[in-house]
Length: 222
Length: 159
Image (tube, rainbow over all chains, first blue to last red; front, side, top):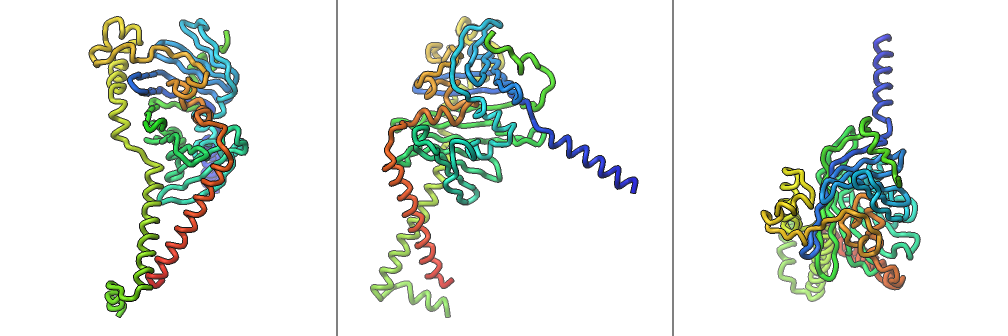
């Protein structure tokens, strides 16, 4: 009896820990993109604290800058001095980091809000969900989200005529503290009969980091 | 017995049977091509992507090994070792949110911040509802054709 109670207690404690929501993520990233003859490479570390609601990029290439993204603006710092501010509407809730931490990556965050599900079908090993915006002025095409083995596999954007204009592929998943995270994302945009590629790679992924508070809480706008 | 019947079917003497077989074949081809289109929709040419970004992979290796930024690399003519011209390599990391940047800006373009929002900006919001209706109608007709062809195919097999 005593042994059973002890086992139950251990199970309860362990389940309590495992169900603790993830609030922070830190990743090293590399972004590669080529358009015609022009190439761009960005290397750095991203810090996201869901509770703070700001995304901080610490870049090492091409410049050693810090970019702080909030719901209203992006602040660029060089040597701790604010050098640029760009105002833009709230985008944090759509960040891949936010989708990961809130377990909404599978649906690409489209299940609610502006987009509604119009079709779900099984195609071979993929489950494909088609989404459409309620507001045609926002987006009048369809977004197809495919899941493979219960993980986000690809996102295909079609315009209103049914032409594919963009694809994203989420690959090389790794499990960090029980959270499935893609470590490579491939973007393809189709324009004027050409394909343009961009890749984002993640490494050194850390969840719920207790250190580096100054990066997660980087004072934005000062 | 069943085999014998099937063999008899092979050289169709009846024009009705011949037409049925042709129809079935067309439906089957339609189904297969639809499947091919589906798998093609959710795949891409990995080799083409690797080749396209190969110069960047080399640059990435160099940067990670030397821990240099753009200016330091350019100052010691480091781009030349990779046959790259500094002018062809983006040297800024500022966010900019005009339409062009959202479309192509390397940081803004579909990056982690807003994989949805920026791609939405790519599209022309002035497309007519008529075009969308035609597309949905096309999907419906295609689904109906596929259903019919599967039904006919399994019927012909005697299920």
